[in-house]
Length: 131
Image (cartoon, rainbow, N blue to C red; front, top):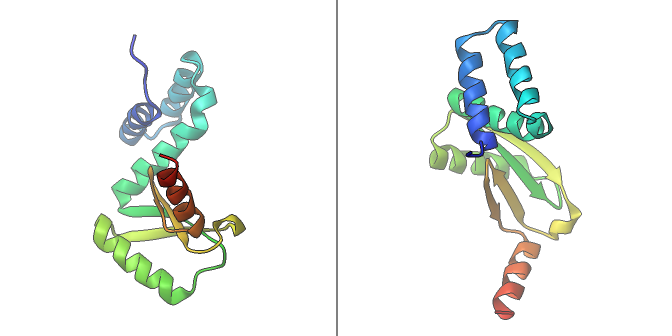
């Protein structure tokens, strides 16, 4: 028996709800999750559903971790670079202030993490030196 990934489940749900917008379809989805004992994974499945919906709408959601709030001009430049790289219509930033970053910036884009923080670089250096 093969295991279904959260992404596969989210895709199936997304397609079934996209084709049918009634409450019966939603009820069937909830029953499916309960019967398959997947309800505990619902948070991760909802995250995958959000990614699918945003992708269809041309929206890229980016979580930004910094020690201090970003200035507007930097966000505009970052937005422009991400629009160009990911070929989407718009960027949705979710800023998180995290004093542990010590400086720099860390981006989470769907399943990708881009870490330009001082802590991230120190961690990579430590890993390299202990090999």
